[in-house]
Each structure stands twice: as structure tokens, then as C-alpha cells.
Image 1 (cartoon, rainbow, N blue to C red):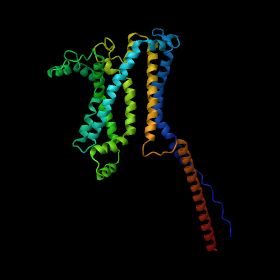
Image 2: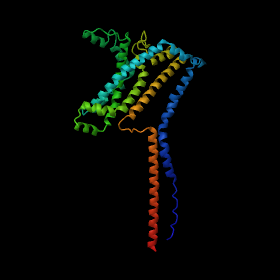
Image 3: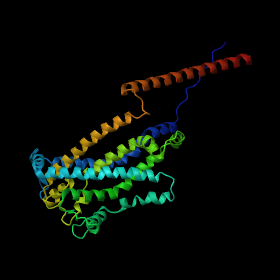
Image 4: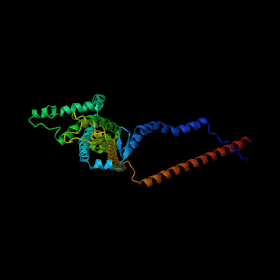
Length: 360
């Protein structure tokens, strides 16, 4: 029995090293343009605005005097802020809730086997393509107090005209209608894409069990749309709290009404910055709005985690247990690989030894 010669170690070539580096680095290079642009056009202006918010900024000199939190205190003490905050949340609720209900219903209709699917699916996106200013001009004329189309129709059926620009709640409904007109189709397509990703086997099994369309919608479609609905709700929340175009173009003055009936936070921010030329106070208001959106975003994040974790397809294990299970699985796979390599080496040595004995 003779010992076999040690097999030479295989060296990894330059091309293999480059391929390995490509697999590790390429994903970061692909997403790096986004973060670079975010730093240039997002993060830097955000930090610069934070600095200005603590100053009494002089636009002519391009500098300011440090005043601490005085700008924030002035904004929070102004009754306009609370009026604008109330109007913002009112318009947001009046637009987001009906918008999501309509988007889910329309998406469910478009997911059916209907004729000219592409035509109808692209048709719901047409309002989103329209310019916000054009939409605001059209709807502001429709909701005119004296000669608006809506009041004309109300008068034709014997109802009193609505003071769309005098009554705060009526103005919120009009502005929310503009928002719903533009964004319902956009959310519809997002929900439609999620509906099409639901396996059709679920519906076939439900049909065999005798479930109707309505039962299938509430038992299969809505639970499967939960992650997508959460995403749509979060984006609608952020957009609703930043609403500007529709209130700005609702009348010819753009100040939010004579008694600030539809004054929103972003509209007031614009008036402070470019109407009063008070950039320090406008920056403070911008940061207050940012913090409000951040708080609501964090709340939505916790809600999202809880809802997703409660899905039937998810495990009931805690995160620590899941991490321990993953570590055990990786260790098991590594041990299996080592055992496989050892067994392969033993078989190779045995085959080589047998070959040498036969050759003798």
C-alpha cells in the first residue's frame, strides 16, 4: 500500500476574482446613483433648511442672526398653524378614504375577464397624466359659487346652491374631489398589479367549495392585498399632508380663502416664504411638517410590521428564534458540505489506491 501524492492546490484566476467582486459590488453600484442624487437634492437642502430655521434670515445679505427656537415657537403660537393643520387633515381624510375604496373596487372590476382590458386599464391613468394646475382650474370652475356646473345641476333639481368657497367643509369636499380625480387611477393600477399576482388556484378552490364572487373578494383578495394596501396608505398619507396645487389654484388669490377655509400647511409655508419673505419661519414650518410626516410614517411602519407578521403565511416565531433558526440552518448546511467533501475525498483516495493496486 503506497501513499498517494498530494494533489496541487488549485489557484483562483484573476477572472474568477473579478467575477466574485462583480457579484459583491455591482448591486451597490446600481443603487448608488439614487443615494448620490438624494444627498445632492434632498439631504443637503434638508440640512440647510434646518440651519435657516434657527435664524432670522436676511434674504438680501444671504445670512441671518441666530434666534434659537423662536421661529418654531412663533409658528406653533400662530392660530393659522392649527387652522392649516386641521384643514390639511380634513382634506386628507376626505380624499384618502374614498380614494382607496374606489381604487380597490375599480381594480377588482378590471381584474375580471372583460373586453378591451388594456383600454380600460390605461383609461383610468389618464387623470394622473393631466397637469395638476389644469385639473385645479377645471374643478374650481365646476365648483363656482354662482355659475359653477355643480350648483347649476343642484338648482335644476330644486336644491339650494352650495357656497363652495365660503363654507370650510364644502371647500374641503371640492378640493378632495380634485385629489381623488387625479390619484384614484394611479392607486388602482398598483392594486391591480397586486391582484394579478394572486394565484388563480385560490379562486378555483374557492369556487369548488361554493364561494361566490363577494365571498372570494373578502376572503382571498383583500387579505392578499394587505401589504400593497399598507404601501398605498403610507404614500397617500405623505402626499395628502403635502397637498399644495389644488388649494393654491382653488381661487384666483391662492391664500387659502378669506377666512382660511382651505389653508393647508404647505400653502401657508409658501405664503410665508414667498409672500412675507420670511425664510427662517418658513424653514421652521417645513421642519415641523417634516416631523409630523415622520411621526405618522413611524406609526404606519409599526402598523405595517404587525399586520404583515400576523399574516397566515408568516411564522409565529419571534425574531430571536428566527435568527437562531437561520444560524442553525447555516451551520447544518456547512456541516453537510464538509461531510460531503470529506466523503468525496475518501472515495477519490480509495479509487486511486484501487487503481494502483490493479495496475501492479
